[in-house]
Image 1 (tube, rainbow, N blue to C red):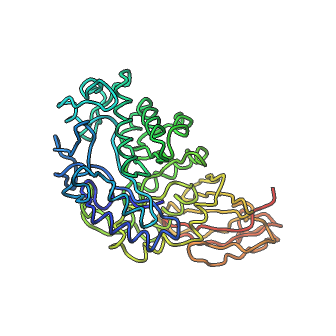
Image 2 (image 1 turned 90 degrees about the vertical axis):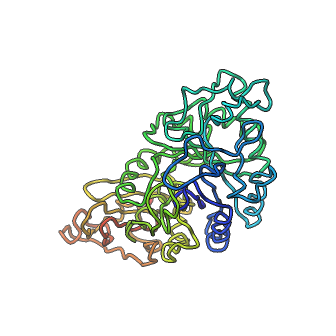
Image 3 (image 1 turned 120 degrees about the vertical axis):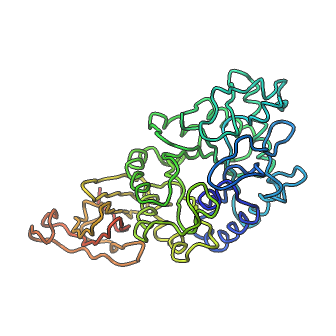
Length: 431
């Protein structure tokens, strides 16, 4: 759980902007579990711009072909200090510090044949230009049949560990699936001796065939391409999360991507400066799905300039408890516009989320047993976003007023707005 610079600042974020968001996170959101600040892509490019990448960018780099932060945007990095001073400031706020990295080795290092630390090879010796990133011009692949390729990853991770990096969002790993790079990168992290969390991207067309391999080598992995502030992007992740939920749990997490909520697009890859284009109900649905599916949560909006009502959603402790305490998260029903998820808590609480994917309101009478709650007894059922109590209405006669609820059970009467959701907590049914 944390904040990432991509949705608001794209490739152009500055040290001052990172610190402003870190301070906001520490003051307003850290008590609710949001504890990680991530500097996204192209932090080494002094010519970075919104809406794309620069070909042949003059990346800041050391004599060993390892990228360094651009001191123009990150003044504390001057003099070869890298991200160490910024990481120290972030950690002093009680937060963890993360950066974005790319698979492979910089083209400029290959052109200059820079020596690889810990090896007799040069960047040109270990490069595999035939396996270059398809969407970013800065990097080419590594030839993992050459021992210098592992040495290069080891040297970059040694540098990141020296800086005090806690989290790595490592890109161009999953589309296409780069198994050799994933293994080499995880090995390099382990050799640092520092507990660095590894997040893999971008997730396009990712198959669950790779689930065991991912859980062995990464903390989290994206299951979608970049998600933006459009309902169609959110809706597409319902099926992906349903597919991946059984593989998420302690030791590895399917990541539905960042939360494009709040003030975004300030200098981003997509769109102009704006408050996100989702309705309030769509924001609630997005967060509800990510929480009950237990996807990692990374806020993409610029926190200091985001609408307070949006920020308030990130401070709902009851809803966040579903994310932290839920277990055996699963989709249990999908028919027409209605989708239902369930999860269990070790303390005997059951969680349920009901979503309306349609464009018209839905009025529902749901059997409590269908959503995993006890028919009677125990604490009341509550809607966690509003805190409202949802009475259990006993059903004694089958009728249209409680269609689908068997006599002897109880109904929950619910109203779902278009693209809306409810997030429920109640006593679990006996098993």
